Image 1 (tube, rainbow, N blue to C red):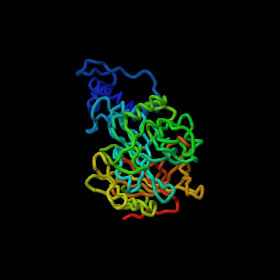
Image 2: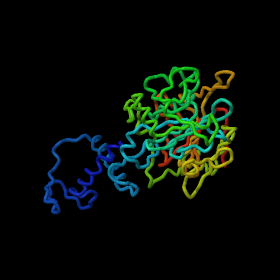
Image 3: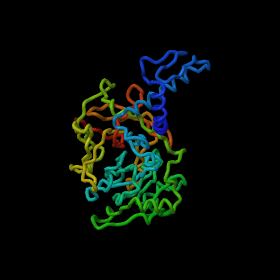
Image 4: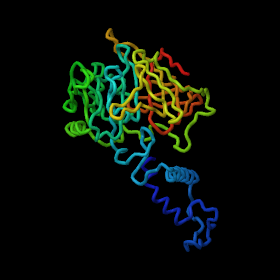
Length: 393
C-alpha cells in the first residue's frame, strides 16, 4: 500500500481537478458539468459492491496521505519501521540489523540513535545486548561498536529482511546463520567455534575503547562487503513484509484513551528484567516520547550526543531456558499467545504477542484481540524473560 499511495497521488489530483473531488454540487448522472463541458452519462457497466468499497477505501487512504501537512512531496513513502516519510530509494533498501553492547565500558554507540527499531534482550552473564535496525545506513562513517550475536537475535532480525551485522557468535547459531538466505557480515567466525567470516574486512578497531568494545564498521565498508558476497541491497519480496506494523496517522495519534486495561505510566523500570544495566525509560510530555537510560545515566548516540527516545515501547515476556553451564540462553521468540505491555503517549495497556515461524512478523494484540496500532516514530522492544517483572510509575 505504501508505494501505491504515493504513485496514485498525481492521478487523484488530476481526477479532483477534472471531476471536482468532494464538491457538494457534483453534476447528477446524465447532466452536463458547465465547468468542464463534460457530459456525465449514467453508468451502464455493473460493478460489484465490494469492488466499489475497496476502491473507495484505497482512495480515502491516499487522500489522507495527500493532505497530510507533513508530506514532503513526490518520491517519498512511509517507512516500514517508523511510518515516517522517507525517500523511496531508502524504503527499497534493506536495513542493517546490527548487534551492539549495553556494557557501561562500551557506551556510547555510534549511530544507534538512527535505529527505527531497537531490541534489548538478556544474554548470558546477566547482561543484556541490543539489536539495532537502521535504515539509510549507506553513508554512515562509523557504526557500532559491534558485538557478537545469539540465535534468538537472528529470528528478531529476520522480520525486517536486513543485512545482519555482528562480530562472531556462539555455536548454537550454526544451523541458522549458515542458511543461504541469512545475509550476515561477521568480524570473526560467524558461529564462534568455526565457520566462515563473511565480510570480516568490513570492520576496524579504534583506540577510543578497549577490546572487545572497539570494533566498528561503516556504510562504505559494508557496501563493499555486500558486493563481494553477492548480497542484494534491495528488499527480497519473499522475506519482506512492508506492512509490518499497523500505524496511526500523525494527525490522529493513538492516545490509548478508553482502551481495555489502560493505565497512566511516566516511568518504565526494567531493572528486574535487565539487572546489570538497570535499563529504564521516562516519559517526556513535551516530545511525547519515552527517553532511555542505561546504568543510571542517559543513553546517548556518540555522533549526536542526543538521548535515545522512543514514541512506542513494547515489552514482550518470553519463555526461555538455560542451555549449558556457561549460561547461554534459548529465548522462545517464536511462540503464541504470550503476554506483555504496550506504552505510548504516557499510557500503558496489557497485550499479547505471537510469532508463527522464523521469518514471520511478530504481531501484538490488545486484550480485545485487536492488533495494536502504533504511533509514528521509533519503537523500543524489550524482550523480557517470563519470570521477570516491569515496574511502572
